[in-house]
Length: 244
Image 1: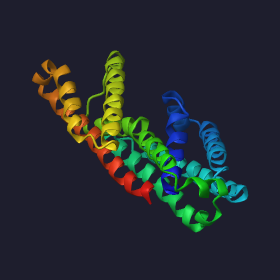
Image 2: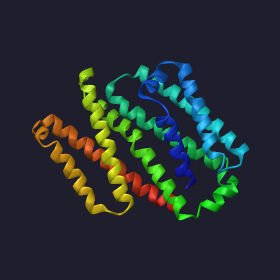
Image 3: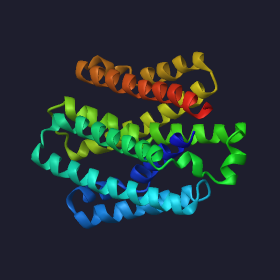
Image 4: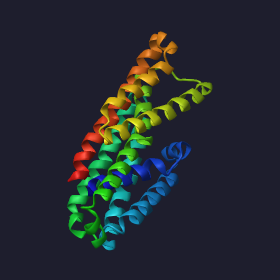
């Protein structure tokens, strides 16, 4: 369960606590990336302090934040060297995977499991606490990170650059995608599998006329299936992780 907590904190710090403009700026300006890593450090220390011994968690957070800075710095440089659109999805996926491996790796290297606080020991077997952690972790994955992943996927498979006027439609699609994933996640978490079909059907009816456009239909299917797959895999994995 601690690993689920660590991953959710990483995603919240890396996605929720920054705007799209700030995210783009940290790719160009080193001081912005440094500030982002410092905020990342503060968030880790603030959330984990009640769970672990303070000295151990400060050391862990410092290592993770420094790693976060250098991993992103290397990614930014590689993106400038290899600027092809088709590589954006690959860079994003590998970047997040390295972050996950680093966090989990240092969790075991520093043996954090043996430095938990009494508060965590009292709470870890509480079903309400497990449910809370499960929901927080699931939503920390399926909202902003999933949206960015799907956007990077579309950029990688499409050679077309859309005009700024198209951005409003993209924003609406992003909101619809988040709502769709939220509803499906809640249904999956409560074992209401039969109702998921109604959600997907309602979305298809709303887009029915646009489905006549082959290009739109293909992108619609890719986006919907990817979105659903992200939620399904996330819920199935985290149910097992948090239960243990």
